[in-house]
Image 1 (cartoon, rainbow, N blue to C red):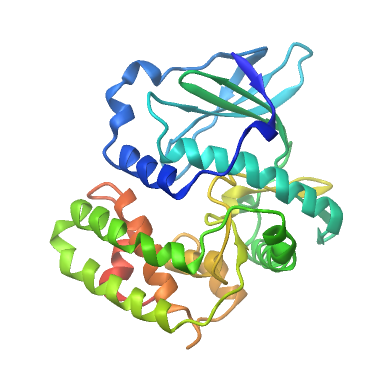
Image 2: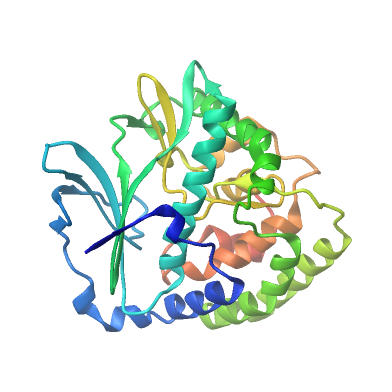
Length: 316
């Protein structure tokens, strides 16, 4: 395995992302099961234990490893024959973590006296069909282990911090998903949505038209930092820091993306509704876009909050 520098990696192009999404959507890499390996050894690192996401999604092989000196590291590995959407998501995490870590260090933002951080990338190991990112190990507890009021305080502080660092990040070339990108992606998302949920084809098309109308009438030009999966599970709290993890989807995009997305999800709505009451200013076109973008990721028979929102067009 070859160790590489963060500077060797560049942002994925729009074409990369579209091709990657097609490969992921049709499960092309799953045809090559021999690359779905248990990685007990990655370079000089030895596996201590694997980590499974509570939501059941497993786009990466994730584990706690130790080096030759017994120091723990957190390693996330993509495996595949072709560079799919998950490969480019991990690439995005490499780039965004570097830029955001630098910005957080400059601003020295604290929440409840704890330093706000993102997981630091220590090393990148790549071979033909593997990309492993070695992160600093954080010995903290997930925010979901604490009370709802405690979660609300931290997430509200993080959202405020995101708004504060958004402009400097835009000047430093942080990955973006602009309004024009969202508009141009609509035909592709309609295609994925209709294939995934043919029963709701007309609902998906009508939602896309409402999104297009809302975006055309929008005068929003500034972009704001969004994690795009800012759940209590993705925040680690230790004695000295609050660390944001799993940043593979992090971009600069439309305002209130994280807030809007988590109001749609039933498992996070309790926390986010306490941060800000749902008002007439709730961004309906953005909520519909997020739902259209994410509704096709769910298997049939599983609760799909995003498809439900497209059908009902409201948060209960």
